[in-house]
Image 1 (tube, protein in one colour):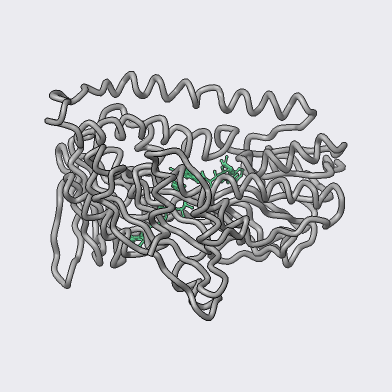
Image 2 (spheres, rainbow, N blue to C red):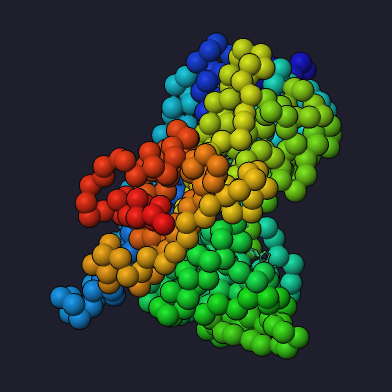
Length: 451
Ligand SMILES: Cc1cc2nc3c(=O)[nH]c(=O)nc-3n(C[C@H](O)[C@H](O)[C@H](O)COP(=O)(O)OP(=O)(O)OC[C@H]3O[C@@H](n4cnc5c(N)ncnc54)[C@H](O)[C@@H]3O)c2cc1C
Ligand SMILES: NC(=O)c1ccc[n+]([C@@H]2O[C@H](COP(=O)([O-])OP(=O)(O)OC[C@H]3O[C@@H](n4cnc5c(N)ncnc54)[C@H](O)[C@@H]3O)[C@@H](O)[C@H]2O)c1
């Protein structure tokens, strides 16, 4: 039988895959999308969105803790069942609505992982399918850990769906996922321990800020263990027992739940990409600046699974659009190094944009670094928050702002202003000539840029 043929076959229905598929379908291409989990991808179903709904309850507890005895007498009682119900309002319709939207514009849907048979053919749902172009948009999945008892580990999906807040929890990994989830459960009353093999949490950020964040979370009850290797997990009657090696010695800790937050790797394993001559490395599918596979020009990749840029939602959507355009119009749109702000939604938030101090040093002859502790500033004192700090980096010759990192209660919002400043090439004096609302965390940025 002749295989079914599409102009474009997209694998993955997250923000990246959806954006490419919609663009191609709306420009007259015959399109199919395959996904073997809930349609709609990580961010909407089991990432950014549900996480933020849950985290606002942790934030309320955090802020109330700060103001306890200063006008607030009692802590609120969080009804976790209701919180989960509220969260579901945001997630439960995502798969159905995503499928409906895609079908409405004529896209065929498959609910299985395809396998490449050769450079032109995949097998999916028992059919052989060919396409002019294949788009790999499969995102990332948790890195598997291989010690005895690893089967007892939960993932971020499990944290988001917890039926109750566990009495105690261990997170293995202190990156974005580990720090946010540890903060979430700890703020809601869980006794949390974070174990990392590295020397610092959140290695993407400046240690000047991450050390302050860790200290603040420690003061609120989270235990951090760095430079430690988990050896095994054993299931006891109520608890899990985690055994780890630290400084050459064996230790153990018991907790109700243990989660793997040791990083996420490109989801390529089940696709059998070798059959289609598609090169990949640890960062994902190897692509050129058009997001086209370097080894098979019939294949594009976008979003977290592509080896270009950081694994974040806004960039994944943008890449999906670029791939759509390049398929419809021929390779016309190159992806370039974008200014991508990011934030870890602990309280305080830690956020960054642009160049780090080391990156700026290697790019410019002279840089100027505005760096300090702002915990005694009014913005912080009025909410009785003891952790507030910043680093802003400028090119000393031109005075242009080139990077910034904020450890701030409102860092998730104010970082966007630094992003705008960098994008527009604003100098320190131009930034300081702007008028912002007062008192505000935004206005503080001007003080941060004072000598
Ligand atoms: C807990 C958590 C919180 C996050 N919070 C944020 C945040 O606050 N802000 C932010 O910007 N980013 C956040 N991220 C990252 C963000 O979710 C991703 O960057 C984004 O979802 C990437 O989009 P994507 O389309 O590339 O991949 P995904 O959204 O992961 O979509 C990939 C799709 O491909 C499917 N798939 C995978 N393998 C196959 C296969 N073999 N066959 C068929 N289908 C397959 C998957 O089921 C999935 O639906 C978070 C991630 C996690 C895990
Ligand atoms: N707020 C957000 O925007 C947000 C939230 C979650 C995830 N994300 C995205 O997802 C990406 C992945 O985040 P992540 O937290 O999964 O990974 P990560 O790479 O940020 O952190 C992984 C951590 O696990 C540690 N680790 C690795 N192997 C270990 C082991 N065997 N034992 C102990 N520790 C180990 C690493 O040292 C590191 O600190 C982020 O880079 C980000 O782009 C973003």
